[in-house]
Length: 207
Ligand SMILES: Nc1ncnc2c1ncn2[C@@H]1O[C@H](COP(=O)(O)OP(=O)(O)OP(=O)(O)O)[C@@H](O)[C@H]1O
Ligand SMILES: Cc1cn([C@H]2C[C@H](O)[C@@H](COP(=O)(O)O)O2)c(=O)[nH]c1=O
Image (tube, rainbow, N blue to C red; front, side, top):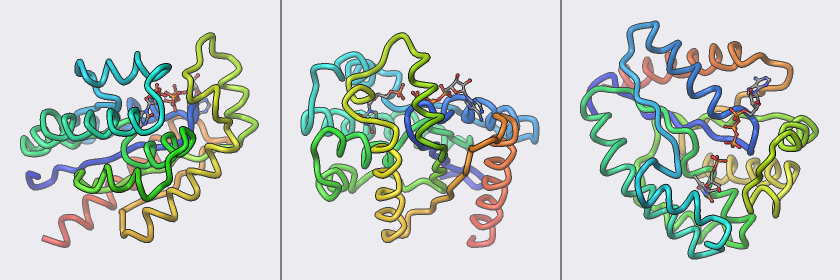
């Protein structure tokens, strides 16, 4: 990773505002002079697109392994090269998503962790939190829902995100929780930008 480059994961339940926050955070960081690359998982590659479009029929361990394979490929071909080039990378979904979504699909957390054992640890994984009621309202407005959105529920996702947060904390994964209740998209992005600035300071201090 080049000096000053950071790898930021944006995580949280379906509809919490990950994509919105990733875009607005990138705008803020760029306005402050940072070079930023925004990406998402499943990745925008043939394998990532296959995972996204095939999720209805790709179930359980097969989906978990396909998602992990996509993550390693994403890391090797997009994330690490961007970091080496000095860019800060923001990924809309990363490992915490797997620790939740693949559990909804029937896997144990330890097995999912094993599939992700060799991924790049982010500089910071930001977990966006909201209420089950608000998430349910947002999902109800969607015309199409993925299989995992239909099988799971906002409350189950929230419970599993809490579990995943604790699981990652115990493994010294750098994390922050951002409460999005009654917080505008701009304020969420501002809080994330502050967390990124603190992470940059910590990383610089550790050199
Ligand atoms: N802080 C916020 N306050 C109010 N509405 C928000 C906020 N952030 C996002 N939204 C709205 O919530 C909806 C879902 O946002 P978004 O698509 O960014 O979520 P997501 O977490 O990326 O969803 P998914 O996981 O399903 O891809 C959008 O209509 C968006 O405009
Ligand atoms: C990163 C990740 C993704 N998935 C699956 C679940 C959904 O079908 C999509 C994500 O789509 P969204 O638009 O971001 O909501 O990919 C998964 O099962 N596990 C993962 O770790």
